[in-house]
Length: 405
Ligand SMILES: NC(=O)c1ccc[n+]([C@@H]2O[C@H](COP(=O)([O-])OP(=O)(O)OC[C@H]3O[C@@H](n4cnc5c(N)ncnc54)[C@H](O)[C@@H]3O)[C@@H](O)[C@H]2O)c1
Image (cartoon, rainbow, N blue to C red; front, side):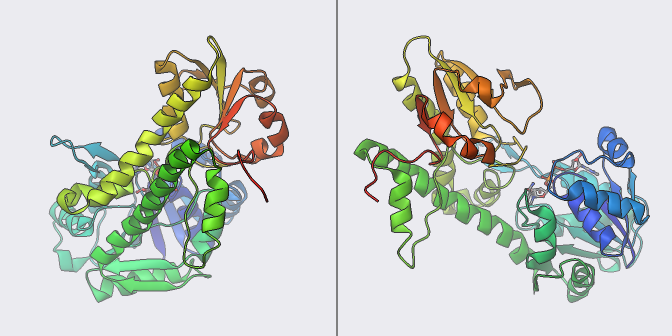
């Protein structure tokens, strides 16, 4: 296996293509978005990720990385397309596998006997079996003439390149031959992590279970933040103390839960087993509700006509990713409650984000009321200036209400 095609050059696919190229493979990255392919052919990464620009330049200079609009022939195809969620006719939210199916059909046009197809996208259990059927149907090859494996991606934005090398990889496949081939591929790049082999369905569930665990834990923290506010105590100090217990590890509350993974993946389990997973659905509801409750709490504290600036729109500190952003939900909820609201997102270049003015921090500090929604390093550095203004701190950056340390 020397020629790899990576389909989907977003937050996961581009660093993966670069890493595979630097690992010695001959890689072609394919994306259906012409702007993405053109930018990459010019040597420009369309996403911000530490170390990515330099790694991309190195892979291009080595002549091992090219870009295309459609997949070429390859020994292995790695699918890293998006997997959003949708609301079904029965009202239950579930995975939207349109992009995976379309990528599968694109691969099928190039599929040759003996090829390996690895699905890295986060998917509900059973998707690899469907992928195999789509590939077989569109290529005319029998399922035993090619190999399918699932290696869910578990990196975190901000540390993607390092984690691609250092994280353990779960390698799941229906057949031992597919698992063996996939291990051969990842062994060359996951140099600091272990490869943990299992069946495809366990691998699919493993990624979902990890993110659902975090969602439920954060929902607990968010619920605690409501109780603590009513008690007049600092929820962050409360959790810090509870976590001193050797068997307790409560995550941090916030303005909600965002991003492409934790806010989405639990629905992939619930969508398949709605009657068996009331806890998963309840956690999702708690986390989705949180920005609306923050909006209510802020609204109660505002003088008439007060101008509010929400500090941070990204779904987590120090990234530019606004997908499923609870801070944007908060902005919309404040506006719906008649509040004049702007935002300060230093990682977004645009002067307006989703209809909200995006102002620099200096300008934000002149607003009547600040809502600290994301703990960006820039805000941490200006903690004292922010704390000096009337504020609501969703992330515990400014120190709590009561603390006898
Ligand atoms: N972003 C993360 O932090 C993260 C972490 C772990 C896992 N994941 C999972 O990885 C997958 C990819 O996520 P992402 O954040 O990189 O998504 P993304 O939206 O940033 O990128 C997906 C890319 O795939 C392209 N695409 C869609 N259909 C295509 C096709 N048929 N052929 C070629 N390209 C196609 C899109 O144009 C887009 O550029 C998702 O399943 C996600 O849940 C994401």
